[in-house]
Length: 264
Length: 234
Ligand SMILES: Nc1ncnc2c1ncn2[C@@H]1O[C@H](COP(=O)(O)OP(=O)(O)OP(=O)(O)O)[C@@H](O)[C@H]1O
Ligand SMILES: [Mg+2]
Image (cartoon, rainbow over all chains, first blue to last red; front, side):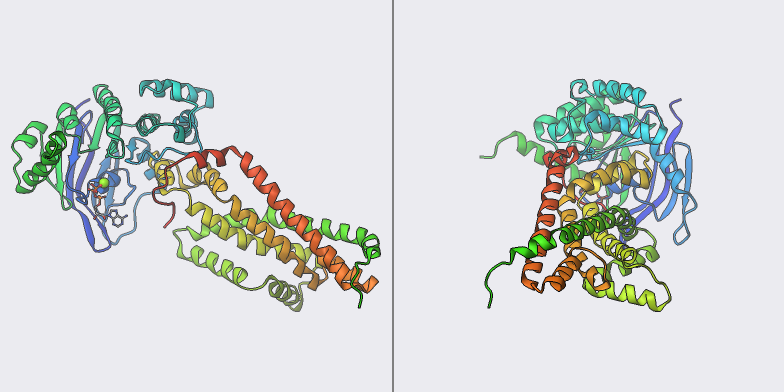
C-alpha cells in the first residue's frame, strides 16, 4: 500500500484579496507518510492545510485528496458539488490549535456525533466505538465530561478521537500543542506518536522539533507562501539549504536555548 | 376633583380585563410560535451566500425594526383592505403581530448565531457535516443558550406593542381598557388596571423564561465553557 499518493497538490495558489498566501505549491504525500510543516508566522502553513480539506478553496491549481480530483481555475465557476466536498472531508481528519470541541456535548457525544449524523451509524454502535477511541487517547474515564470540565490537553485528545471517529485516511494537525500549557504538551504528542506508530498518514504543522525528529519522515519548510525545503528531518535541522531556513532555525533554537539557560 | 380610586371599576371590568388579558397572551403566544421559526429562516438568509437572499432579509427586517408597530398595524390592515383583501381584525392582528415578531426574532437569532464561536462551525464542517446539519446540531443548540436574554426582550416588546392592535379593533387588553373606560367614564382607573395587568404579564413572562433558561442544560454547559475565539458568520 505505501507508495500510493494520498494527497497530491500541483501549482496550488491561494490569495486573500491582494495578499497571495500560497504561491504555486506542489506537494505529494504518500500513504503512511508523516510530514511536519514548519515556517515563520504568516508563511501560509495553516492555509496549506486548510486547502487540503477545502476549508479554503484554492484560486488555481489541482488537488487530489483521497481519490477525489479537483481542478481550480481562476475566474471559472467551481466544478464540484458541496456533496463532493463533504465526502472528501470525511477522509481527512483535522485537529485545530484551539480544539474546537462542541461545547454543548460530552466528550463521548463529541466523538459519536459525526458518525451518527454523517454515516448514519446506529447510536449504540457509535457510542461503543467512541468509547474505544476515548480509551485509545487515554480518556476512557472522561466520556461524560463536558469540554469545559477538561484540561486543554484532554480537550485536544478528545478532538483527535473525534477526528479518528470518521476513520480518515489522513490526519491534518494545525499547531495542535501551541495553545497548551507546557506541562500538557507531552500527553498530546504521545497520542500523536502512537497514531504515527499505528501507520496513520499525518501532516503536522508544529514547532515541536523533538516531535519532528522522532516521528517525521519529511520536514517541509515554508516561507512567504512557498515550500523552500522538503527533506528528511536530520538534514533539515543540521544542513538547511536556504538562508531563510537557517535564519528561522537560528531564531527557533535560540529561543529554546534561552528558555533552557536562565538569563543573568 | 376626585383623588380616589373607584373600586367599582375593578369589579365591573374584571371579566372584560380577564378576557382582554387572555387575548393579549394568546396573540403573543401565536406570534412567538410562528415568528420564531420564520425569524430563524430570515436570520439564515442573512448568512446566505446568495446576495439576493441577504438583501431580501435585510429589506424585510429593517422597516419593521425601525418604525412603530402602531404605524405598521395601521398601514398593513388598511393597506390590505384597500387592495381588496379583507380579514377580520382578529386574524389580521395575529398575522401582523407574527410578521413583526419574525422580524424581531430574526435579529435576536442573528445575534445568537454570531455569538457562537466560529470554530464550532468550522470543526463541524471539517469532519464533513453539511452546512444544514452543522447549523442544526452544533450552532442552534448553543445559540439558544446565548440568546435567552434577547428572546425575553423580543417577547416583552411583543406584549407591550400588541396594545397597538386596539387601533384596528382587535379585542385585546388595551381594547378592554378602552371598553371599560367607555362604560364607566373612569379613564384613570381603567388604564391603571390595564397597566398593572400588562406589568404582571411582562414580569411573569420574563421570570418564566429565565427560570426555564436557567434549568436548560445546554445553557449551563456553555456558561461553564471558556473557549470563545472568533465567531460564526462573517
Ligand atoms: N481568512 C483570511 N482572510 C484574510 N487573510 C488571511 C486569512 N487567513 C489567513 N490570512 C493571511 O494569510 C497569511 C498566511 O496565513 P496562515 O494562517 O496560513 O499562516 P501560518 O503560517 O499558519 O501562520 P501562523 O504560524 O501564525 O499560524 C497571513 O498573512 C494571514 O494574515
Ligand atoms: Mg497557522
